[in-house]
Every structure is written in structure tokens, then in C-alpha cells.
Length: 353
Image 1: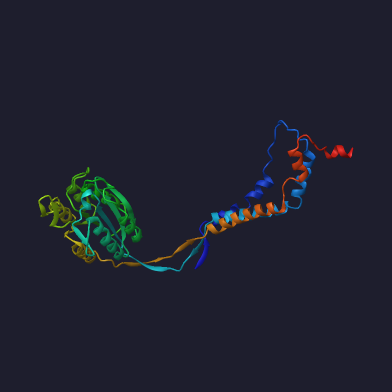
Image 2: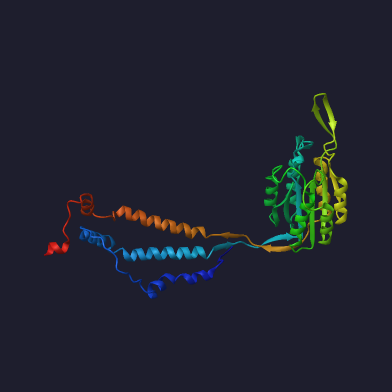
């Protein structure tokens, strides 16, 4: 562990108040109206009694607060021991369909009926946890495509954002081409040896401004590999007025388009008809895109600026409490004079005469 300051040059500001006090010219006050106070002598004497002997103490407290504020601004830090972190150099983006059709409950999760997005969330979080060393990001798409998480090594945060996604928050339709285009734009801006997009959807391209085939060609030109996953069961029992019948909930899934996208970029198309199939898909992607990489030294940094700030608050509160405890307020005679305007005390100079 090492103690240091992120911005130590800010300590050059420590003598600033003294320099202002020492060399700044006083402001000239122009003539202004005065208010006649009949108890001026009592007021002056009270101020002298209150301030007598406290000026050096106040100066010390103000100086202490200034030093603590400058210390906080310099950002004190504890820097931990170096940790070995695997970095693969791979940039991996997840593009997840959250259109209205993803709420179809034709899959199971741990033996219980579940909608498609719930299964993607559960297994997608496990998949992200295994991608040690990869920079991962998240694109959510429906009628529009949105970058939910930029590329980062913080896989836990990306998994949390995926788990917090809601069906329909990006619209009810499906814009596959826009999702690919957004992923290409983000991955192309990042340096790295490998760029991978995993696209998961359960329908056909029904929205968006970018044609999916054209987006796939742009992805291939940018060196991006796309793995597409078609999600949804082939059979599902539904209740009707005439009894229970079986339907194909994945009738709208455009598998030919997903195969074309994957083939154009050197990737593969996978079909996930259930929880086990999706888990197998993730394992195959782990084999196709392994995670070993070079070691990188990383250190944990703990910010400590809040401690000197807390001390400033305690010093100010202590000074205020001390003033209240010693009764440093106008004297009784002064309060009586204010409360009874008709009884005005004579100034001290007039009494002497």
C-alpha cells in the first residue's frame, strides 16, 4: 500500500490567503449613509469583550480549515499492491433483442416456464462472467438500437445492465440492421486484435434505417465477426376456445437472414430452442473465441478526499458549539436596551464628562 496525492501541485495554493492579505490593496469605501445607534457604546464594548483574546484562535481555525480544503483538493489516495489481470485484446459486443416478441413464454429456465428475455439474461450473465480479459459492451435494440454499455473490462456492470433491461423499452418492433450498424461504429473506434458481435434475436427485421445485409457487409469490411443466435421454441401449446392446440411461436424468425449475416463476416449462426441449446451456444462461442491473453499489472486506488472534508465540517461545527457554550452574544444590558427602546443608555464618553 502506498499513500500519495493525485494532484500535489495544488499545495502551491496554501500561501494564497496570506499573499492576498499581505499585498492586496484595501478597497476604498465611498461616503455612505450612517445609522445612528443610541446604544453604540454598549455595542462597541460588547464586541471588545467578545473578541478579546480570540483573534489568534480564529486565525488558527481558519488556517486549519484552509489546509484541510487544499489537502482534499489534492486528492489523497491509497494505492494497493499490483494485481495480475488477464487482458485478451478482444472487443466483444452483445446485441440483445428486447422487442415485444421477446416476452413470449415458450422457454423454460431451471425447470420453470420463462419468457425469452429472462433466459437470455440468466445465461448471458454467466457467459459474461467467463469472458475474463475481454472488453465487453451491450447494445439493446427494438424499433431503435441503443448503446447500453460501452466497451469495458467491468463485466459485472454490463451483466447488471443486461439484467435490468425491460421488454419494449426500445420499441415493439425489431431493427437488426441498426443494431449491427451501431455495434460496428463502436467496435471500429476501439483498438484491438479481434472484434466480435453476438447478435441475439427472435424475429425478422421489421424496423430501422439500415438494411441488415448492407450492415453485415460493412461489418466484414471493418474486420468484425458476427455470431447470430435465433431464439425461440418450435412448438408451444396455447389454450383457445376450441381447446389446446400447438403453434410455432418462432414462425417469424428469419433464419436465412441471420445465416447470411454470420456467413458474410466469418461467423456462425446458432439456433437456440431452449435453455440447454443457448448454454451450448455460449460454450461453442467460448471455444471459437478463447480467452487467454497477456498479463497486465493493475492497482486498486482508494480515494480519501472525504476525510479532510469531514474534518473541516467537524472543526466548523465545534467552533459554533464552543461559541454557543461560552455565551458570546450581546450582553444583558444590550439586550435590554434593544427590547426597551424608550430606555436608551448614554454613551460612555458622555458619562465621563
